[in-house]
Length: 111
Image (cartoon, rainbow, N blue to C red; front, side):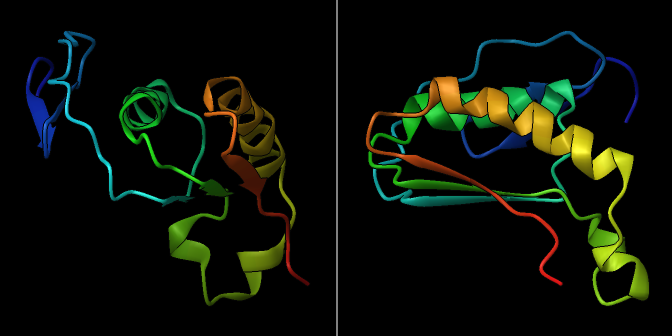
């Protein structure tokens, strides 16, 4: 995508290249669990997640999986890396935005 183009995600418009516009407010009343697979903690990820946290009024659980999507199923899938550690650290920032009854679950290596 070129500098000022936008990508739409059902009512949420994300700016690529920092020309971000305010997303249309839409309550996601059916969203109970949000799983963030391959979460790194880039600003565009936070923009989308913050939008969903503000509008998912029934959200019960946010699961953060920092494993690289392309490494799943390979021997490197469970290797602990500095990138995964940093992603988990950034993911803790989401806790401040959760509704009182919602839980943040940050996955660690399963082996």
